[in-house]
Image 1 (tube, helix red, strand yellow):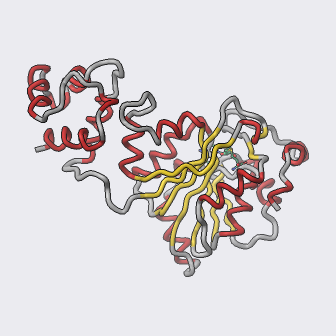
Image 2 (cartoon, helix red, strand yellow; image 1 turned 90 degrees about the vertical axis):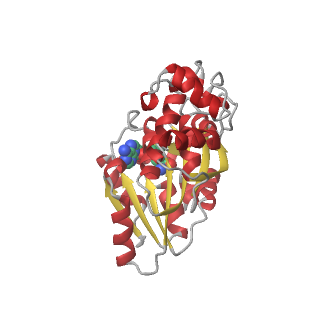
Image 3 (cartoon, protein in one colour; image 1 turned 180 degrees about the vertical axis):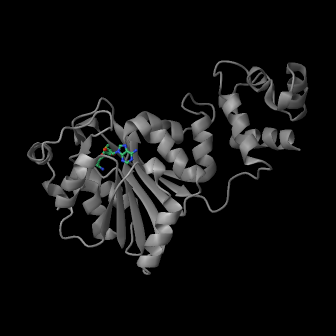
Length: 288
Ligand code: SAM
């Protein structure tokens, strides 16, 4: 079924419904059956899964998910796409379309409701070809709200994926790398060129699967303080750790210098060279 969504068909469906592609809402629709298949397969969807799709657009990926899942909830912000989605998904009885901003959805409550109504459902898997303008806030919402999901399989701008998967000592490594890798392990599922979308965006994309960790990779006394230290560390990329961390917990420059030295971490290093374990050591010592 997904093979039918060529560029010509997508443009015809939108024209027939007098709908334009909203740049503001990041509406670049997938016209590449192989990429659609790679996302659906990469998410490892089972009949006992509830799939939450973020931004279904005209429903190309939704169809592929519905073939494999027990239940699908598709959350689309754009009212004008709802009738088109309903047309695409006609005849399928395991899909609920929700017109909403994903940032406002209580995902924990949604999963509870779906489990109550469909006792065969065991797990939640999040899937989406995310709008570029809001990729990071969506990922952080999903992670910080501790949603009851097993995995999050999402397409994003290639450069964002490089930041999420980066290692210490590289240019792409930053606060968002540490935040995401604290909550998840990451797997690259596919690289998708700009030509696979209608309209064609200026950037290439990458599909990542984020598997939520059952146990965190570092023990923290105070998670909030850890993220405060990470954010402060990367606040001025070209400055030393000493300059960036001075002021955290009210410490003067001299105090911070002695404190970092005492931990065996050179105050002259830059945040991008520190591992998650080293950030955790700093935060835990500050928290004591
Ligand atoms: N899944 C479709 C596909 O692959 O062809 C569409 C992907 S398109 C990149 C992103 C979709 O997310 C658009 O349909 C857009 O309207 C929707 N969207 C944008 N912001 C949203 C938000 N805050 N909440 C829910 N959907 C959103």
